[in-house]
Image (cartoon, rainbow, N blue to C red; front, side, top):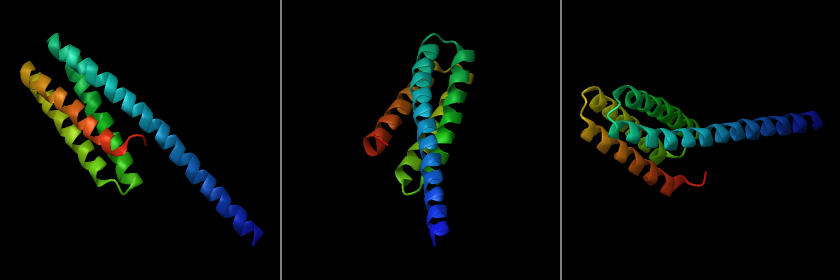
Length: 126
């Protein structure tokens, strides 16, 4: 009986530790998204296609990690949906950047920020 209790406690501790690491990673992704969306907006304004495209790619990849985080965590369908929406906006920004349609790319980057705000209203603090 005692071994069973110790084993369960160890499992619970590992789960808490793993979730804590995920939360730390999540916080890092949020900082990356914030900094990168500001950067993409500056690069779009400067009409620096290469830098803006790299930022859009980083946003897409980071939102994928955020989406996976919320799927794994469960019980947060709005967060999953908003992550997917932000990825679509990042992809649309990348497409506009490639076409040198900087007005459209700028609009998409602003929509990304609005999508972030919508998610933060529901799920912040974590």
